[in-house]
Image (cartoon, rainbow, N blue to C red):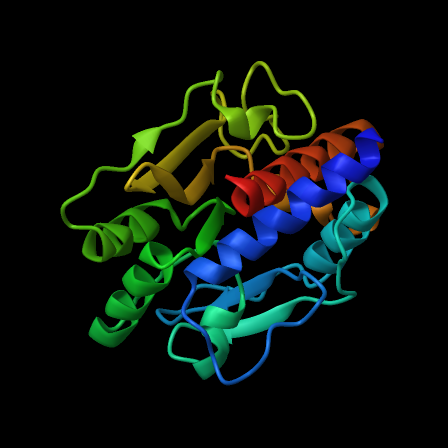
Length: 226
């Protein structure tokens, strides 16, 4: 009975999220996928091609969501942007949004979309700069450990897990909110998505990779059901 109710909650959450995004001519897929955001500026938005298929596979095994096999890749000006309720971006370097892309991302997020940005060490200053253009009247705030995103499926009472030790210090979670809804989740000083890569890519121990997948699941489920 619990699994049935959980499936209904996830289904309703996905439907609710999608309904907030204005309808497109192209019909929504019946399978959830993660749309990787292509951006300009020179940053490697495409890095680690195994991360999203692996995350989708973990999600398929541990949550009652109909999940696609592969990621989608989308630019902010693509016609089908609004067909994807969940955007993901990562990279090591520069990010630059055009004036049109800034307006499009703002509309996407305010219309029900969600962006998960994972700093792969080097994109922080550029991400903050571009997001300030998207939300000039908002502040990116640190997410407390008590927030529901850390308990939406797996429990993380101490906040984000530390996946990579590129820099010292604890991992940090930040977010933008619009009308009370989290629209952007930003992970810094941990690089969650590196833990989704094939094990031979970064050599992370399995327990560390498991935590990365679990936190990824939390972010996705929270985004679809908040």
